[in-house]
Length: 454
Image (cartoon, rainbow, N blue to C red; front, side, top):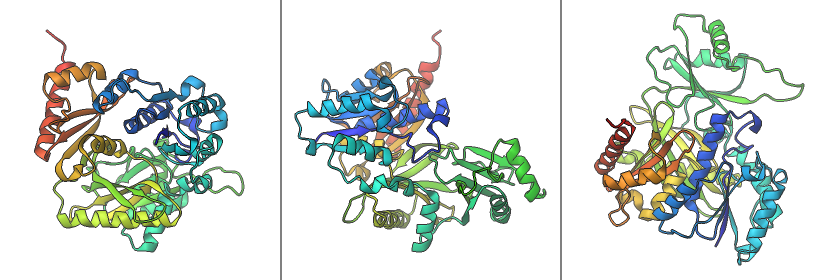
């Protein structure tokens, strides 16, 4: 069946005001949206927020074995759109409606795929007359299943282990909670309730050596200081409003924050499941997140963990997914956990949407089969600077590391950022050692290509 792909990572369910997104963040959203193109088939229609990169589309369809059958990819910016509310994109909605009508497929055969099924997507589905179960999402279900505060409440009620911490408001409550918890390990992490990718996270620490993995900013305090007075001053110096009582209109509730005890030297795991309307959630993949210090890629499946921990993580993930299902959610869900140095698991959040590994899983399933985790290891990384994809592919072939479908190994370019010249890559090996070797060969190639010729 054909599908309409609405690649909407800059969703109203995940950010307070779209107009306030800085240019760098919007470019990141464009890259996240481009990841969804790996799911396309020839008859599909996709809408992405940023420009259409024809060279990358040509590469993608070639890798997937469908050259000459390039799906329809439309850019929202070509129609003057800046957000996903469909009534602000009347021309684009009309264009898609006309293309669906001319497709030769019955309207009931079309499905909708999206990054996050928020209220805007529910509006699109109703306007286009697509037969989907949009009602729960019109009630803002997506925001609920992306809320860290909601996750902690559900997990605590179900007995799922979570990091020690509390849901708080900005201001005195937040400062008091940091002072209460910071001496547990020397650090706490403060998270915005609705934000993704670690960009809403602040590490507050009295440990001079700790690295803020998963935090966008770090605030360091002297261990012997009066933290109650020192913390608000430090937050102001760092232009953070966490210690301020926000000036809001009467009766308006402030945004929530989560303060958690930070576990230095822990490892970060993530699972992805598909939740059907009825029946058991299905595990699609799980891996370890590479943190440098922000998330920079994945290792699929995780390496060097006890077999019992693999089983526990997958079993716990399914139970967490069931909690979301009982709230009425269906679709993709990503579940994050941390593993302490003594292999104790605690769970930090769920996200009812596509995640950083969704496109990797899609690539692997299409190239290797649904059981790829049993017979392959994938290493991914974001931000490697290399030539644009059309030129890079020639060099990958020259050094013998371009993905070879017959051998089931090699490098796949997951995304290609035309602004920064950076890619997200997937090193596919039949075991961990081969994947590491492929990754090192790619790193050597990137160094070679960045070195000026004599």
